[in-house]
Length: 604
Ligand code: F6R
Image (cartoon, rainbow, N blue to C red; front, side, top):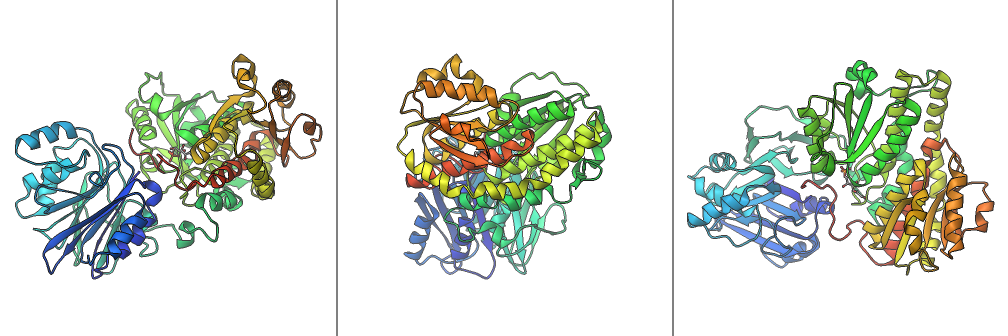
């Protein structure tokens, strides 16, 4: 949520910072701004805009602003409405100190009241503005000293980048529970909240850790602890659209590749085993686990629900799945045989992190399935598995979701083989997982059929998604995707629940997408679909190749190949991802940046 860029070095055209900031626009795009120190005039100039970074770029090209250092921000509004005044950077009373901030200052109201009493004048409704005034209060000529004193009074989370007119040739950066890194390229430094911003500039980075404050000048940087630069595992192509019109489509289409990466080197076919290096250290503890609690949010929560079916059926472990936002306020009953598994693409989702910390406080084993390497969830869990799905830029999660499902299948194999699962069953699951990338390639060939179906239904006002067992969470996921990308009202239901209420909605204008794959619950789901047909509801089916009878009750069918029942969700979700994508495009929406949303939800 929100993106930060800061630069200090020989370059004086802020455009290079804007190029980096654009790579973070998926994290927030309500408004944007920059502050630039001009050494000739000894002034800091600020530009702000509502809306996309391109508006800021237009403003910059119509101004003669240049200089170094400069700081920039793209905002996803939390405290304070979307307008120019609330956009970052925020300054102190005299325009000397400028701050960009990700995170949330929880005690900002108290601090603001105090500061107002002391004579500070506020202009915005944001929590961030208290930081610039607090730093002003302590500023006696040395910026990092003032920042250090100010942060002692602050409660909450932050990634901060700060410049000052009166201590000008430096940037001060600080972080607490919100990522911030320093990219190093000789005597130039680019500071950012996400590696995607700086990968085309340098691969040498330093991650700021919690409570660290860095001072960066053109000559050197100083952090409390001396740290060795790491190499980031990111290629420039990973964050480009590669000819696709949107990141969402690119990420849907690259799933054969991302799924291959997620399973690479992790399957021992002969032994029917999964080799998960990140779990090696805790494998003995995992043998003793009698219960698993999965916590996650949104799409990752749906992956957790599929995981529940997999782990209970094949590993024999009782599983409970909860939203991070609910678990953190429950009084869960945990014992030494319970483990918690946090699933998160970004590894920075505030509610998932809070749930994880609560479990740690209770002393139980914590695990993670995370895509972003080095993220908070990956650092704070005892052990875990990386997705290796590559960066996901589209706000709607697609390739990370299928990768989460694949990793959950690998985890099922790993834990199952520690328990009752036979060698033959292990080999069977391993063999089917290996085939997944190829089968996904096949499902992607339905792209133009899905597009035609989207054209046919583009004016529908509501949709129902139904499925059972492994495909119940996929019904939830299909509905979530459609809501977020095309702003159409959609509900996901367990097909068996239809006659307990939702069937009342059905008429000829209320289409249903039914996941009717040939599996252990096919006949049951089919009779639920027939009840819809009887009430004239149009049905679009996702069915298994070779099932011709389905055409008798459905308007449209998308066929997917046969696989093991527990792996079906990886295939059945793909037409639903494509459907929501095309619906959004047909309606003219920005599918990569749906309204009111942001990629990683770092606030509660
Ligand atoms: C929906 C979507 C969100 C995320 C959720 C959790 O398409 O992307 O529902 O799945 O915000 O995010 P992570 O996985 O980063 O914890």
